[in-house]
Image (cartoon, rainbow, N blue to C red):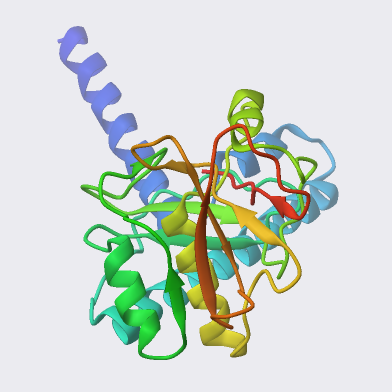
Length: 242
């Protein structure tokens, strides 16, 4: 009988825990808030809980807005209706103020085709057999990047080989193209008018890295290639968090 009561109490407590957990998830609460219940001063405790809630609520609201922007973008330009609400959001790093999401089924060629309906795309060379550090093959993934119009990196003027050996998480070609397309959608302007993004997260079969800029001829998006050991003074990677 005691054994029965023990298990009954245990499962009852477990049920209550999951109810609390469900309510916390539905309302965007975190267990970090519960750490403040040990404080003696009730007023301070409440203020801290409210402050944490407000901070997390603002962050969650901003992320939801970014996700909706990505959903609109793929619907508008690729005719892909997607629900990205369950995408895992990586940890944001200082200086990386914009969330982007990559979805399956969007190739470099499809991006070129969609962009070409709105502005000039000058793409040199073949884009088959590219090796990307990341790709949304089976499911979407999110990444944080800087919304700056120019790449801002400590690795400006470094070769792709040097950048990769340093361990920098650099944009792939597709990530740069999607960022630039979204930037154009919002501003009707282009990235990299003064400098060039070296997409060190992508290499072709020859080991070369793609570079993307505004282009003196294209005046839109211009893609070229640079050999692994060649350093160009005006090129830099766009670092991301994923």
